[in-house]
Every structure is written in structure tokens, then in C-alpha cells.
Image (cartoon, rainbow, N blue to C red; front, side):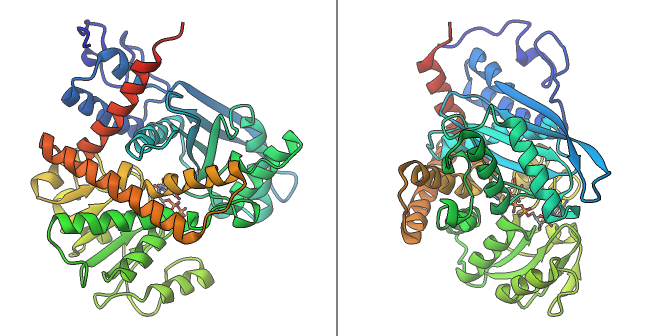
Length: 440
Ligand code: NAD
């Protein structure tokens, strides 16, 4: 049942302020993007205002600051960390932890909100959560990274756990970081608790196929979307921004599916070969030299040029806010598959739509990671191992189902794939909220 909006409702207030006009603590560009998307979907869906308003702010946001000792022993820095639970309606919190120099509460809150819609679109029994540490990990020694991770885990230990909130890797973190979180948590509990994190190494209960899962999901979506626009994958040209976990696996699997990956980039620079890159060769170069720079069998290309290359498919797989009102008119790809979270602004979305560029949004395109995290969590709790084939085939099945329901909603309602995915995710969460009611 719909209730009337009042003059104090969110619909009448600036979008990142409370109904009474006070600014919100997490009001940053990335939060504005996530809330702007929610608001737009809420209007299209005619969402009940009570529920809409509840969805705009996180249920719990933990901000910690703690001392971090550098290897020289005398230097002790204060580091800021966050763990946000968007809402606990659908089950335990689920979402990655990112380490990056500019992480803030707004960014982590936006990412937690996207996790809510993502889990709901995939029908996973999780609520959206996310964490972050404001530090650049690329300048840390392994010992520093370990100390930092263990102290951060100790600071957030009261709000994480296999039944409460389960972190995973994200930008700047990896399976080793997850292993340290699991070990620190387990030491406090007095027994091994593998279900406290996902994306951990196989040796301590990680899942086969988890490391590749996000990229595998991106490529599954790419293949489904190519079918929608009648493009054959054989010979389709692809550019990938970001060559970390998501970008490198997306590039490798796109090439394996028959596409021609012509350009990839990392935080420093990119490489371009119109004849197609040999991905095993590029990965071997990065394993040895860490960065793409200097790779001999391609031309250098900048991180901004890669977005405007003449290719069929663009996969942004680095950071947010990359395709904006400024560069969207120059995007030549026919299809964008969002490996990263929040790479496209709302203004850019409109420009891309008017230029007939199809965008597969992050909440579906990069959902492969959390889907296999769900499989890993199940395996950890049941102390049971799935085979890699089983993981990959269940992942592919769920990704195809989710893509098909998003595409069907898009067609039925005449809206973009992003709007369709948001409508699907938000509807499922709203329905669950209605069923659970309000306490007390
Ligand atoms: P990663 O740290 O493994 O790799 C990030 C890559 O992006 C690196 O190549 C880095 O050099 C590059 N990069 C960093 N900053 C950049 C910048 N300003 N411009 C261009 N390139 C830059 O991280 P990841 O796990 O691959 O995550 C990448 C994106 O995918 C993030 O938006 C993350 O939230 C999203 N994502 C990751 C997962 C996962 O399972 N890891 C799941 C869903 C979504």
C-alpha cells in the first residue's frame, strides 16, 4: 500500500540530506551516485516512501581509527577504517574490504548499498555490507600489510562473523589479506572459523573458482549482452581498464571465448595492440614486473584513452567515476560491461543511452564474485568441498538467470538494464521488509 509523501519526505528534500535538511555524514560523490540511482528507481517503481527512505541510509556504520606501526618501528600512523552494513533484512552482511588512499564513509556506504541490490538480484541470502581502510597498500611491505590487517580485524571483530557480516577481497586486498583476517578472528574465538571471510586461500577453506569468479561473471554477461545486440563474439574487440583481479581474469576469459582483447591498463598506464594481446604473455609480464609499463609487444596508451578506443566492448574494471559527462560522448564501444563498482555516472548513463551504447550494470555484471563467495560460505559452514566444475557451472547458471530476468524487466518496462536491475533488487528487498515488519 502506498502512503502519501509529506513535505518532510525525502522526495522534497535535497537528496543527500535528512528530511529536516541536515547533511548526512556519508555525503560524498559516490554516495550521491548510489542514492541518486535508488531515488530514480524509487520514482519509477512508485516505491512506498517509508521503505524508500529506510533504504537511503545504512543501518550501521562503524568508523574506527587505530595506530599502525611502520617497519622502522618509530613511525606510528593513525589509520581510519570503516565497516558499513546497509541493512540486515536479507541475512548476514556480505561485501568486500578495500584498501585505498581515498576511501571514506560515503564510498563504503555506497558500495554497501550496491551489495544489497546485487545480492537481491542474484537471490543470495545476504544483506549488503562493505569495508574499507584509508591507506595506499601498494607502498606497504608484506609485514606492514599483515600488521595493519590484523589490527583492523581486531577493531571490527564485534561486528563480523559467519552469521553476522562476512568480508571478502575488493580493491587493494586479496586472498592473503582474507587469510590474516580469518586467522585473527579465529585466534580470538579459540577455534578455526573459516566462514568469517570468503575469497580466502584454498588451503584454509577457500573455494575453487572464487579468484576467477568476478571476471567469469563479467564475461558470461558480456556473451549474453553480445547476443542481445546480435554481435558475434568471434573477433569482437575488447578493451579492459584495470588489470587486477577482475580486469585480468575478464581479459583472459574474453580472449578464451573468442574475442580479441586489444588494450588493457593499470593505475599507471595501459598497453594497446590492434592485432590483439596475448593475455598469458601479458600476465607473465605483470607477474614479473608488477606493472604493465614497458611491455614490449604493444604500444603505450593512457588510462583515459583506453575508455575512448574504437572497440566493440569496453570493460571498466578498476575504480568508480571513470565514464563521465565529459568522456561519455567520445565512447565508441557498443557495449559496456561494468566489472568495477560505480564506474559510470548518472549523466554519462544518459549520454550512453542516447548514443545506443548498451550498459550491463555493475550490480549484475560483477555479481559473480559474491555468488561464488556464497558458495564458499556454504562450503565453509558445511565443511564440504565442491569441485571447480560444479562451482563454475552453478555460477554460470545463476549469472545467466539473473541476466535474463534483468533483460526481461528492461523490455517489459522500457527501461535501461541498470534501472531494471535496480527495480528487481529493490523490489525483492522491499517485499522482505514488508514481510518482516517494524520492530517494536
Ligand atoms: P585489484 O586491486 O585487484 O585491481 C585493481 C586494478 O585497477 C589494478 O590493475 C590497479 O592498478 C587499477 N587501478 C587502480 N586505481 C586505478 C585508477 N585510478 N585508474 C585506473 N586503474 C586503476 O581490484 P579488483 O578486485 O580487481 O577490483 C576492481 C573493481 O572491481 C573495483 O571497483 C571492485 O569494487 C570491483 N569488484 C571486485 C570484486 C572482486 O571479487 N575482487 C567483485 C566485484 C566488484
